[in-house]
Image (spheres, helix red, strand yellow):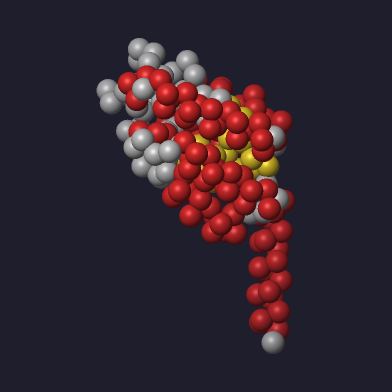
Length: 201
């Protein structure tokens, strides 16, 4: 009986410590998973280093998976929320939906579900938008961008319209595939995110 009580008390202490520490959960795709780079070079790791300098109790959990879509993110979000109990959730998904030509309305619905789930779990949400290259057609690229813009407005969520601003299409900032940022671009990604993220922390 005493052993059981001791285990219960320890579990509550660990839970409280995690809750007090504050967790930023990043749910993204290859852009946040540092595809083609060392994990330590990615913008999410740079974010962890910046936060550690300011608040040693705060941690960053990178739950990004290369190739993931908004449907995949929605399907795996609930367990992540239960496990990590984040106070801030960063959503960086949608690029793979666009590259596969999936309907922007479906992307918007999936992201809306993720925002709702995160808020129900008590977390603030930061939405990182993406834009599609013009070769997919003007109608699709416009609808894709509008899906992010209108969702951010409707949900009144913290929002970065284009994570790759100043990086996409810029020489030296993109890997040879033209899709993934280089190591040199990662600091720029962080600086794009930081002014919108900081007020949420």
